[in-house]
Amino acid sequence: MTFKDILKITFNLAVLYIAGGVLLAAVYAKTSPVIYRNNIKEKQEALQRMMPEADNIKKLGDWHPHEKHAEYYIAQKCGEVKVKQVKDEKTGKVKEEKECLNPENLGYIVQSFGKGYSSYINILFSVDSNFVVKKIDILHHAETPGLGDEITLDYFKNRLKGKDRDHLKVVKTESNEYVQAITGATISSRAVTEDGVRKGLEFLMNALEKGEAEHGS
Image: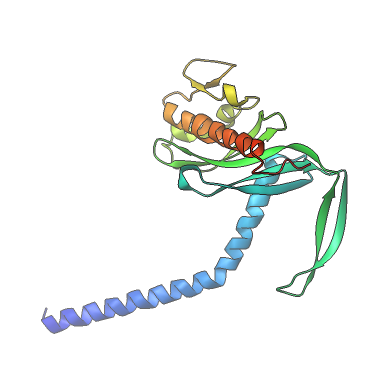
């Protein structure tokens, strides 16, 4: 193979890489609004699963566990729901917006992150108005298959239900008072229970106490 042949092959590869990059950018630009809308829909569905009895779930603010963006919300039962017509300034279309009147605070929903054995675990959990855990969901993780990935199973998630801040502690023995670790996956268990849920709950309680978030009243 001559030097001229090498230059020709290099040039052809460069053209292919550039063309592929342009095509990928064009496809992403076309589909990203769809992806964004789908993500919003998935987020709303996930929040509603955390507190299905709520009529209104409203974002209270942001926080950054492990320097990752996360959000927290208040869940309310509306005494009355008022529907009003609002014109979208960007599209000019008229859409319906619901206003929650005389709301009753049912609890809160917090997104958090815990540092696991092989990944940062993205967690969503809900607590009632007394800050007792109601539900928990694992949004994303990359823990060890057959061990740490059991954090997604109901038998483990159910161990956190009914626990307040002082009882969100992992133990290796069977316990109703605290959270029993998954066998062979204590690090993943602690990442969810202590680093994720307990720290998220502590942040929420401190934010409400300092007035950094609304109580919904």
